[in-house]
Length: 247
Ligand SMILES: NC(=O)c1ccc[n+]([C@@H]2O[C@H](COP(=O)([O-])OP(=O)(O)OC[C@H]3O[C@@H](n4cnc5c(N)ncnc54)[C@H](OP(=O)(O)O)[C@@H]3O)[C@@H](O)[C@H]2O)c1
Image (cartoon, rainbow, N blue to C red):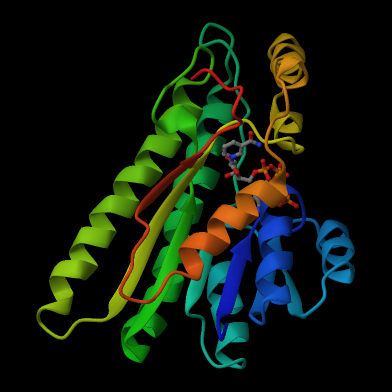
């Protein structure tokens, strides 16, 4: 693969696994996340070419500087919008700050990244944007209306952009593929962003009781499937669940 990729939230979980798989397959990968120590540990494990790029997806300048780092590698032609938080809580006790943070990171953060990579993709005539959504976007669940809404928004943004770029190709526009990947339960640190203790304990118990939740590597394989499809094939939506997950 000759990709120059930005992976957001690449220090842990799904983003870390995706960055590692992309780099193993020959992509040059810029790993973005807030915690430098997690990025360094993740990068040290990778066989391949990676650069760590500490940054916050809520900050447009951090995405711009990641794109500039990618310019030096040939130009970013793959964005994996993976950074996300899930500070869920019952609406009766949820903090407005958690609701805002959820939208700021999961939606505005993804938009900041898309806005930063688009000019280069347009100029070079193509690219691929992969947004990590969630089954929660398709089936909102109690205590998670805002998290679920953030993922529905990401699905709508993905499909709208996909259709727009497809229509633009008729007029000589760039060939930009857009993919939304919706995982079900994946064993990662995501539950650590739940500040409401009862909700966190309940959510962790749900994951533990499940017969084999997905691993981050399972989701990375799904991402690779979409990324490595021939250029005329756009995997627009892909839902991946543990076999034992009922919803
Ligand atoms: N685990 C699941 O069951 C599941 C299911 C469906 C979808 N997902 C989605 O998968 C994605 C990855 O989550 P995960 O399960 O792998 O959990 P995770 O290990 O907690 O990964 C989330 C990553 O996002 C980064 N991040 C959070 N806020 C950020 C910000 N403001 N700027 C930059 N990076 C930020 C975190 O790093 P820093 O804190 O260092 O910034 C972290 O590396 C999320 O979008 C999540 O919604 C997960």
